[in-house]
Length: 506
Ligand SMILES: Nc1nc2c(c(=O)[nH]1)N[C@H]1C(S)=C(S)[C@@H](COP(=O)(O)O)O[C@H]1N2
Ligand SMILES: [Mo]
Image (cartoon, rainbow, N blue to C red):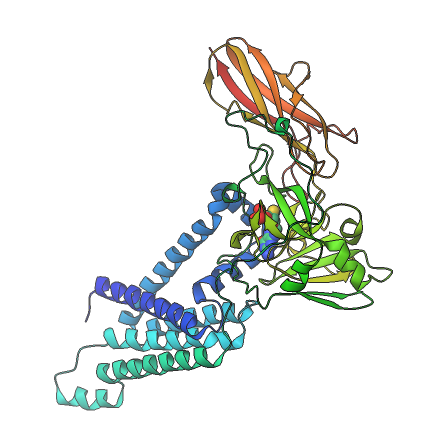
């Protein structure tokens, strides 16, 4: 009999082999997402909100990597169990491998880009893995004739391996045939030719960026722009076949392809995006120059019916957002964006088309890889995050952040620069104040305003004396709203409270 260590190693080797083979096959056959991606994304879909927040909190934008490592560890443990089980009792470990395959297949079937057809490479590999595991851990050939007679009726090692080999060959051929006969999944992001805007954004005055080291620049470069989404693997959208379908409570359904969209007069606008999961002082907020078609132009063509009050936007990956119809039809720059800071959208920010809506958190407005706008009612439908305990409405809450000095720093006494950013999208920032050790609020200097839809830098000069000090900031909106000091967590509709930084001077 094989040792326990050898059985465990056999389980790991066979399971890893089956997973790799299944990943290769799904890519060859192009039937849908690979099993790892399908399991991860289904897991994300079913993860309760609090756990997802905890993950974003702990790992930030590396939450996907953390999930990948987590899945690998669980798989490793189950593979060891499969090996040990198979050693204990014939076919029981193979059963574990098959069950794993069925779970992965179920996840694959459930994905929006998956379906039943997409499950066959996963199921085939699970069966192959089970056969190989049973073969490699099979008891050695018996010596005595009587046992040999009995064993002959059961499957021996050689015929199991032969079966697995045949199945592998068969599936590889099947994958090849499927690849040739099916249209296939989308290729990598093709370069787009973006037209010049018909309506340009206001020029950015030099005074809009104070260029203070450590303070977030007015414009966030695409590579630094925060990223939040539920996609474990980036959705790949083929620009040549991309379509936007506008339907629901409309007089006339509208279908728009990318050429048609790019042929319309496009608007350029500065908009600061913010995530509802942004903690006070957090960095899930960025600003870019967007280029896109005003959503109201498309909605006007469709003609929303009386009684409609919401647009449920949907992404190719199944994500949905509920945006008030009024916000998408008023004068603001709610865009079906194709450009970001002068280039086409990067794949991770929604290539080829995404929504950008000034004044709302991303989860209720900024659908990336958008493919559908359904005009409907809040009473009738709910969006992805609403189903997971978040508010159906998500207007951005006024907020401000201290970027310098950083917390827990030793600083020299004297003239110190305290600076950061403040935002109240589609309302605008009228003032920012700073206070030290709970003292009187003092007015900070504001950078020039570019648009009420973007953040504004601020700076305050502090004659710091030696000791431990607490710096706090609060903003006032153009509507007179003063940022509340009352602390609230990010669930269900965004955090509140003043950002505080503790420093030591001297
Ligand atoms: N398809 C899709 N779009 C999405 C999301 C998502 O998970 N899937 N997340 C939303 C959330 S919560 C935010 S805050 C913004 C973030 O956009 P960014 O990644 O470009 O910064 O995208 C929104 N659009
Ligand atoms: Mo978000």
